[in-house]
Length: 244
Image (cartoon, rainbow, N blue to C red; front, side, top):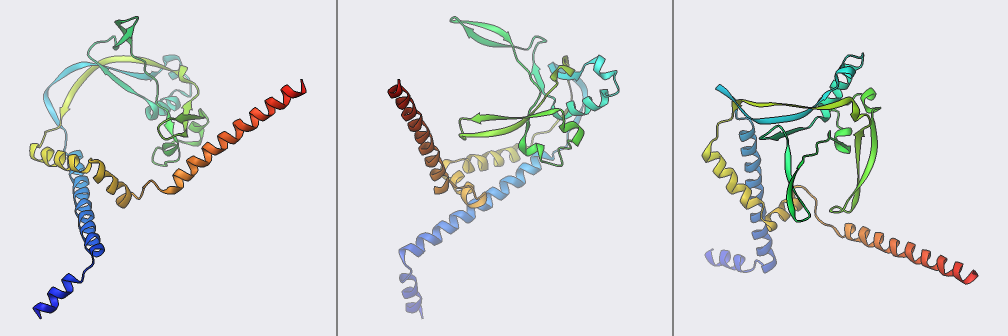
């Protein structure tokens, strides 16, 4: 009986053994990935505890509806829009400055702050809560992303003049306790899962977003179409010059 078992083990091909090892590795990665998500939820759900003595930590700058707009009949309507696209910026002083190099010298300039743009994902998300009337005040635009090499669609508020910047002290009233054992375990898992090889396996096996040959084919087609367009343009110019 033992001889039969040994013979069956020996008969397993090299390809099968590699497949078994690969499946075990993927199983362990899935397990750690799932545990990492569970720890993230635990960290997020740690309750905030009020401070006995609140303290000020710098200043916060944000947008508010202008007083003259707020006095109109649509004041609360624009206030509802602003709650969805408002931005907050924090600084140690009221001036909100940043360093910038100019003519070899470092100078301080004011930090620019704009209201948020709405991505196409949030635009179509019912949880975001944009009403049909609110959508009429947004303009659909496209922006080229050099990293993804595609055009991204976003929506921008058409009347930003209705809002004005306000500055107020940033008062800290609550704090979240830190569980050092939890933070240590979560950091170790993130360090493992963020490795280039492990992240590739997660992206392909869990998220299902591998770099397929189709994407490469599409990029090649785009390049060839550009070349075809430029070639036609050069031919047309040459014909015009011959006619002259």
